[in-house]
Amino acid sequence: MIERIVSIIATHDEAEKAFSRNDPSTTLVVEADRLDRYGPESLRRFSAMNSKSNPTLKRRHREQAFSYLREGLDRWFRTPTSRIMALHLAKSTGLISDSTDIFKKKDRS
Image (cartoon, rainbow, N blue to C red; front, side):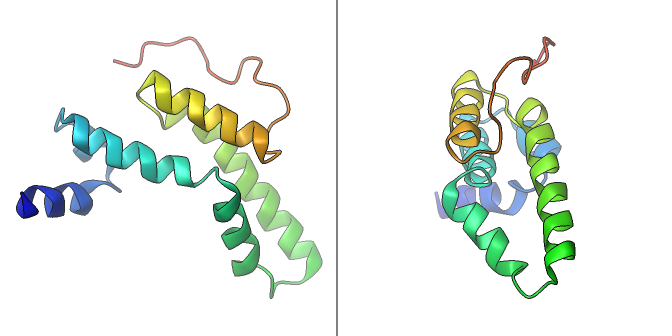
């Protein structure tokens, strides 16, 4: 069991490798890690990491990061539940204001 957990952790940042395992536990870990990006604590961590930057640079980094996160809403999640949770978190933290057309209609198999 420990070996399995270590294996999941070792590959969870390599999405294609992790998802190719076709293992629900691996998918759960990958998507939980990605969901963390959208929570208020993660946004606070991001702000703290960039707090030493000058205000102009800080705004630019923040907007780049938020743009990256908005784009990830459509690409990073495989399960319907994680997609719904990500959308909810993004709305609750102000990352997005409207869910219209966030998820493009495409096959996610």
